Structure formats: structure tokens, C-alpha cells
Image 1 (cartoon, rainbow, N blue to C red):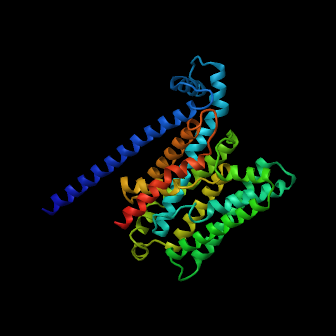
Image 2 (spheres, one colour):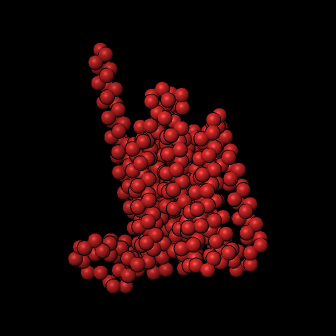
Length: 350
């Protein structure tokens, strides 16, 4: 009898895992469709078949492709579409791990002030005229440094004794308000032209993405995801509670610092290139949790996929809302994210 119960439990677990793999496979296909649609949309509208032919030609398949279409896909739209997938995935993973560490469904790199710190770094660099250097170099570096500075503050708090996850969330919210206030101050004392530049950057934009920035973001993301996936079991154990995770041999303090560092590096890197994009880091992980639960082996990849899909879809919408104009993608993600945010608050209350 005990043997039958054991075998039934194993069979049920295998069915659950197979269902999770199927869901991830289906959503990967949906993400690919959104990715192709992102490349196809724009001032020069391309059909899906032309985009697929151009991508196959780029991969080395001998297919006849219109030279203009090939240039548009390869030089202009492909880096932006890839960056949308990477940035959305990073924000989804960042939110997932913040929520795991702090046991708070509202935690994300945005709500903990990391994105606002990066925004202030970029605004400060623009205010000081990038110190005479190229804005394309100084602005991302300044944004990265200020984001890591905010993360260092959170590291310091996390290392203190008697600091719990709730207090870390409050500290992050305080950072968010601090850097938003500093941003407002910089805009207030800036000229109208400079204030407009800062505002455009703060809205979030993928338009300046190029192959160099895509390669750097891809490398950083791959390295950080590798180390996060290695700790998948420990992070899953952490969701059982700190006391139980410690009883299972998990060094909670070390895990928290390591994960916080990896999330900060990923967030700082993507934010330094595309600006502040909110709500993806809240929406994607909560959707992933509802679909596959807390097992980090599935929760982490699905958070990446859903975050990538949300930002890729937002990129498509940003190009079709006002035909011929590029709508700021940060506004689009906020429009998508705010209703979900309110729904999440109401559902948690129930």
C-alpha cells in the first residue's frame, strides 16, 4: 500500500513537471511570435514572411531577400527587438528574485529604488554635459554606477543583524522616493531642452539599442542567470521560510547577498541602456507564480519568458499607438501594469 502511494506521488509529480514544460514551450512560441511582430512593425511595415526570410538569410540560409528589407531588419530593428526580449527577461527575473528574497509580491528592482537610482545617474551625467565626453558612453556608465551605489546601500542593510525582509522593502521604498526627488530637482534647475532630454530617457526607450549594447547585455544576463539557476534549489527552500531553509543547510545571509548582487548587476546594466521601465518586474513574476508555483527551476525561466513577452509586446504597441511616431515604451508598460497591480492588491486582500 505504501508502495502504491509512493508510485502515485511520483507519477503525479511527473505529470506536473510535464505540464510545466508544456506551458513554458507554448509561451516560448508566443514570445517568438511577438519577437517577429516587433521586427515587422515600424514606419516601413514588413510582412512576417519577409522578416523570417531576412532572419534565415542572416543565419546563412541561401534565400533571396530584398536588400532594403535586409538592411532594415539587420541594422535597425533586430537589435531593438533582441534588446526588448533581454531587458524584459532581466526585469522579470530581477522581480522574481527580489520577491523570493523578501517574501513580498510587490518587490522589484523598480519598487526598491534601483531603477530610480540609475535614472538619477543618467540625469546627473546629462546635467553636467557628460563632462565633455560622448553621451553614449558617459550616460550608461553613470546610470550603472548610481544603480550599484543604491544596491550597495541595500547590501549594507542586509548584512546588519536584526534587519528583516520587511525593513529591506521599506529601505528600498525610501531609496525610490529619494532618487525620484533628486531627479525632480535636476529637472527643475535644468534648461527646458535638457529637461526634455532627461524626461525622454526616464520614459524608457529601446531606440538607441545597437549590436554592441545587445552583446554586452546578453553576456551579463547569461552569466547572472547561470549563477541564479545554480542556486535554484536554495532559493526554492528559502520560500519555505528562513528558519526552515537554515535547517536544510542553506546559508541564508550569503544567498541573499549573492542574489541581490546578481540582480543589481543585471538591472544596472539594462537600465543604463534603455532607461526606467516599470511594472514588468512586478507583473511577470506574479504571473509566473500563478502558473508554475514557487519551484525556481520553472519559476525563474518562466519569469524571464513572461517579462520578455511583456516588453516585446509593449515595443510593438509603442510603434502602432501613434502611426509613424515612437511612443515611449515606459508609458506603455505602465498602462499595461497598473491594472494588473490593482488586481493583485485586491486579490491579496481577498
